[in-house]
Length: 354
Ligand code: PMP
Image (cartoon, rainbow, N blue to C red; front, side):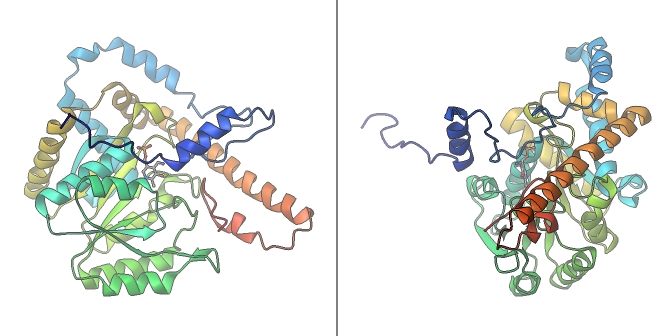
């Protein structure tokens, strides 16, 4: 036999295919609705104004000489503050194991590897539907995937009862992936009251919640409000995991800056978990590129830059909301016989029409 004879062309990513058709289409007024990327009124991506200042400061460092463990600890500290809250006991007492990750995707993959290393017989429970790559990520890490009820096509909202039933019926100590805000692809989020109930049911079953937070700020325009789900679980005494991406809310797509954090019972456990996460990451890519990490750390640790970024992020969230309202109004003005309320009831960048 010849080498690679068995290798067939992998299935195409459907989003990439739609994008290719978009690029090939000569229509001058085309709009690309396939990509989950923010665009401003001029069709341009979001770049925080403070990037320029931060970049200038970073250039003064010799990147090669920067102590990477010091840089990554500072980056992780700023990231977890953003997720769990500045004043969270988790941050204050160091009850987390955190590592920089290759954006949200890398954080998910790293967690999946960690899961396989320490819970080789476990499954991952994913919402139905979810970001399709979640399926690939856990499959590649050889962890079986099971889905739980999430979206209800009849109401174009959350199928809360079915979701709760699936939580109750899963074997004790199952691992679930949850989207804390701006669910991709449905735009359907749980209310605070529903999160409290979900957290309670998780407690009863000793399930582990892994939050994939790729859009913090995009639901409400407020970083703290969008982290409410995560914080409810922490308040209720859960240990949680969290994948954070700075791709969208900082417009850092290609830089792939993200953070994986796992909460632990005490600092001894935190040190052990962190060392294992570093060990896994080291065998896959040694360490992540440092430039984007420095940029994010610079912005998050400088009160002025952070405030400015938050303001700009809010502008983005407001524009997304305004686009939803306008689309809804225009459809109503066309005397459509359909009910389009889900366009404004759903939140974030995504809208599920089906
Ligand atoms: N999780 C979800 C829910 C996403 O929508 C995305 C990006 N589309 C990711 C993770 C991956 O994020 P990143 O681009 O930061 O790798």
